[in-house]
Image 1: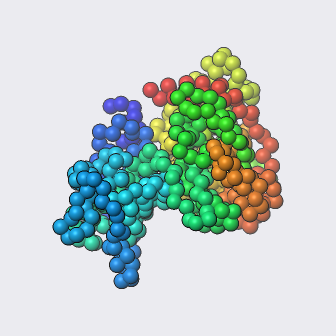
Image 2: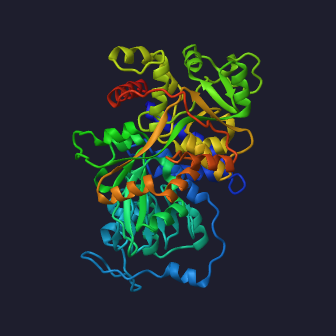
Image 3: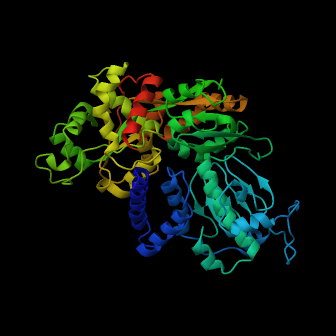
Length: 540
């Protein structure tokens, strides 16, 4: 079995366990497994497997989520009223007088559909904010998701949420047998959702009068910020509406087609600099650079783990804030220490390697920044600069990633697991400080959850690159507008005005480092790329 297949199957097993726990009060384990298997079958034969587990989770969560039980007569009428469309060449009139799918597209819909062409088969098309809108079938994907106004499937900001019905069987069970045309549109809607999320979608917005829609691709940890109604209202005051797709910052810098966007917003200066460098097969980017806000890397953990690490001399508390000794961590990993090797460990007596859960360094900035930290420490607190330095540190740092097994492609996934599953799955998770503070503001933290800082850490500067004048306007606003800066602080980011962040953590009683002093220098982009490439080869 190939490694990618092993990683995918492990991810599916973890997903099954996670959803079984999440929906225990609503569905049986058998129903959950069936929903996952059904969604997985839609990707059979797809050669691109990296994001399959993530897409399956989005589809299945939509299927399993509780559905509204009541509708007003007006809502029911609106849901079943199809807008008029213009028949194109090859389109057919249905026997009931409505507009049917073009014959070729209807055949694809009956088979489930496999491409962007199927997503357009609903009799009219409008692509908005990184998604696709099937006007004849009431399906809209906005910001990397999809919304079926008439079929009832919504994925906002990259996820899927049932709105007026489920994504698959649950919808059909409640409504009954659908007319062939409407059923075909629903299938196309679901396929459109998957295609939009997987392929990034186009950003060709249908703006509200007087409001310019600006499309961009951002790191997943900023999804909550742009989805915040207060942020959207603040932007609307300046005549802007922002539609986003999300991707790992390294993907944004190397493989995402930026030609369809107005701005790119990776999670570090290193990734932003890479976007501005010439690359083969990619148009030159000459946009402006805006350091909008920052967030140091941190570790999300639990009080029992902190107490255990403290007793072992790996963690220490200073002025109420916990710090994690990265030097001792690298030494323990080199010696293949497991949790059971810690003397007197009755708190977490698990025979697993002592590892911090990261994202995939091949796609995600947070993992790349963690690689910067551990390579700095492994090189005796010196920035890795030469090929000799690289060869010296790689045997020490590569196992810190490879030995984790499957890792998520962006920082959102492991932190969501941390919040939902407790310390059994991942006792220590590499995150941005902003994620922890944002969770505190939203009251998602449970008792015993602790924020700890690696010593040393790195400051990750979330840097926007404008790709045209609309992107420049957004960059200027995000980096200078007091209201937007204050809202960024509310989402856990450190802004130019230190009092904004200080006010948020004080109000929500989050124990953070007031000043982040012990900071490692990061390698140059080229050096970090070589390190990342070498770590990637270790996976094979």
